[in-house]
Length: 178
Image 1 (cartoon, helix red, strand yellow):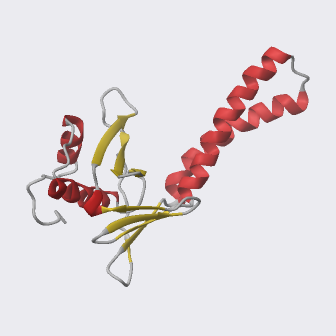
Image 2 (cartoon, rainbow, N blue to C red):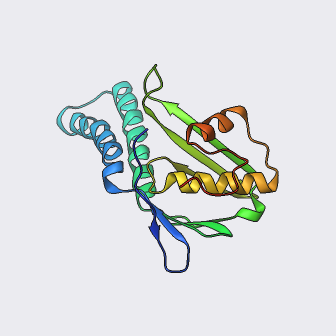
Image 3 (tube, rainbow, N blue to C red):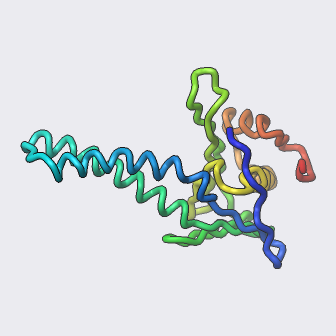
């Protein structure tokens, strides 16, 4: 997992978290690497209906991935003692006092599990939010979510507990580990 930068403190005691451009460049490149060849084939060569369907499908997949990357990059998350507020294309607010689900998953990019990323999934009633480990201050977001889950008695699956421990977060800790 890559090192994450510190969160940007806000004057009201809240912290603001964003996806840095450098962390998103790989996703932008992958989206372009799929879209450009598809667009080039359509622009240069007449394509039959079967090939157009297959290429169009690939184009849609890479286009959706690029759009998702753009939306994630434009998102800002503000964490306070009482809530987590995401702003961008869609606005979501999760009150810590209403947290009813937390999942921390690790996705490995290698068989030896030395490289990969984490994804934090949170739910408070109808409000849902997923954040990955490229966001600034991911460790602080996870710690606060774990604290809220523990105080609310939210059941965590074994993978989430193991991933929390991999980040150095023990559920019995009353203070932040940094």
